[in-house]
Length: 456
Ligand SMILES: [Mg+2]
Image (cartoon, rainbow, N blue to C red; front, top):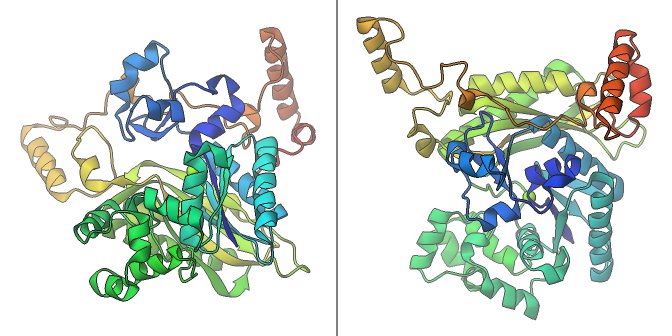
């Protein structure tokens, strides 16, 4: 049985762990320059505030306290993701991260009832240890596990854990309710083409002839139909989710602990990911990297470090992405470990065309005609005649990360403060400052036991 553990509204949920006052309120997380909304709580979705809504349009609501808008805190989200992966690794025989907040687990040899019990236990454990709400989808194939997770999220009576079989009455009822666009790997455009052929629901796709699907659409779609029947035939990374995340990961031919070799592997994966990114016409806002040691080698020390690097502006530029890879490797590399797998994930994708319609939004995508025109005008009329919108350093909307929460789990200066009296907090801060000056990091480390310093 394959399980998919997926956090609910991940970025917002990470924020709520450290600021419970945000619970039950409409909360949004903004992109790197506080430009637009990239994550929404259920309450904000209910207000019909769309993904990608520019933050300035919501300024009124924010000021009146109707909604809470936070700057993205990628360091916190990356670290919470690493903790989620670690918790699952401690509990399950095999874990494969699929995105920052989605992890596949492989539960072979367990009965349905056992799998459901494991799912429910993991859900409770993640809530208790990390404070994150997750849902678990269980099924014999990746595609069905993904759908089961979707159902677990949408239908409260499943209590966060849904198990689907290829051939059950429940599966039939559910697949008939689900649009074909809800199926893993079926994007909007493909869904439109399928609708023309009368394939509108997940059930329609399941009942279609795989040979015909292969001929008229693609091998992957034919396999997707088989997966909906419960026949496993797609690997985790065979299906890309357009406009969400792009991942390239591979096991090494030979495991290595040499930094330069790891860097070379990560560079290769990064360039492959960037290529896919440009093919689908997207820009990425963040890069996540990870390394795994071989968990079957019990004689070797184990480590699965990861690093999350936010990009200053959405980009599809290899140079920017490779620089992030270099920085990420610096953060996560530890000598003395032999790694057997590396992966590069591009996250929080945005449609390049739509994004570039706005001059005010910075991107590092090369835009040759625009650049040439601006340069020509400035040469003729004097430097600075034409500028991009964001040059006024004092403009309040330029403040990046103006509403960022603390990096509670990765930054000594930004740990959670205990106590409510302002005097007590000030005293604690002064004490910590003293400790740091005295080189007393070790003291802080012992106190923060359990908040292991990850990725540095
Ligand atoms: Mg999620």
